[in-house]
Length: 266
Image (cartoon, rainbow, N blue to C red; front, side, top):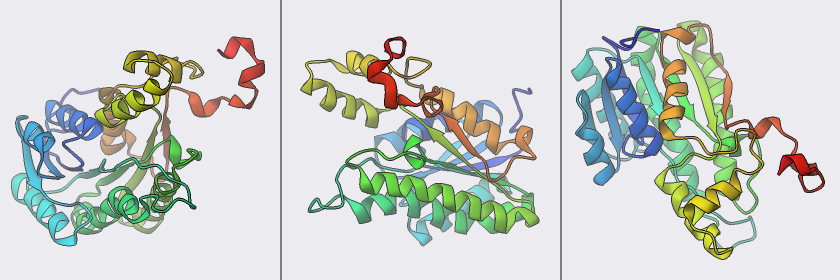
């Protein structure tokens, strides 16, 4: 593998100021890419803007005008657009009977951001035979209890990916989706702090408890997911499209229904 596999390529990343988005921007620039990061005007975006080779565009990836500005910035800076990586998203909790499960906000943050930005990017991607990589979740294939909006939005990203692969494959555009399991980002840190406190556990102990039934017995790091994203966005995956790639430390491979009765699973 060349350590400069993205030299001469331009990549647009939504949610670039967050954990997986930032790690992907950092990896892409290390491998030669020109990167445009689109995201809220917050400290995360300021941080990613400090990376060499990254241009930050403040905005909402679910807004057509903001997404268009980001695509324009990519074309202006790099002269072309080779990949779009959609990492923007939020986590919310609530069932269908709760007063407000965050339905509209969650679908906008997790699904509309990917759809709108990809729509704006497609003409440029068609010109280069580029790639779309959407970041879904283990919740894109399995339900998270008490998270109806999050689960639905992450499932929908898989359908969007497959539609893009079917519709634009004949024009040379590839589309794939990554489904991480637990990843040690600031968002999941907050969840672990809250859930762990209910059992008297600190953050690290909560992560260990959560990973106790996972084959690799741990959560992933953002940089590890970035490696998977880079593979799907780059030239090494030239014949891969419409794929759902599980990057979950193996949890989706295990039937946990018998875990309470199976000592070697704990």
